[in-house]
Image 1 (spheres, helix red, strand yellow):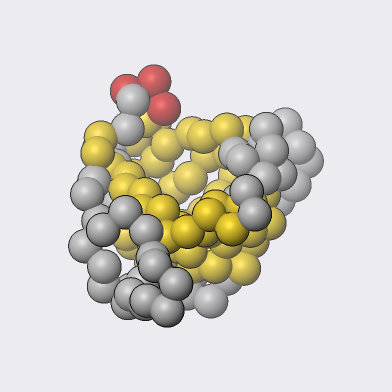
Image 2 (cartoon, rainbow, N blue to C red; image 1 turned 90 degrees about the horizontal axis):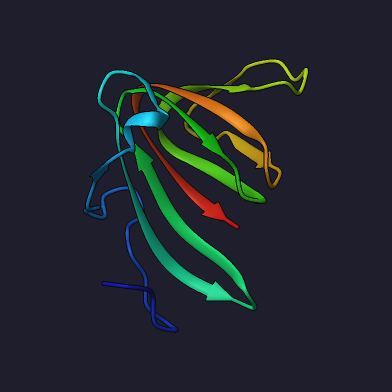
Length: 115
């Protein structure tokens, strides 16, 4: 499935995702994998599901809002002065384009994102 047709639905919590290894230069600890499944593009805005298995990895963020469906993680913000953010089911987070983050996932994290 590559996206949702109008009037269709999926269970975002149980949808099977195809995981891939992260680039070695992004992994700080463990062997985390990630998966992305685009659900729809609406007026140039992408909506999808993203998942990461336990481990620690760095990222450069897109402009996005996300809601955690399951799992737990700590997000550290490099050079921004922002405190680390603990996230779990129900957390709603706003990230800005270009933010440098470090994700420490302790329980496989699944989120719905709007970017």
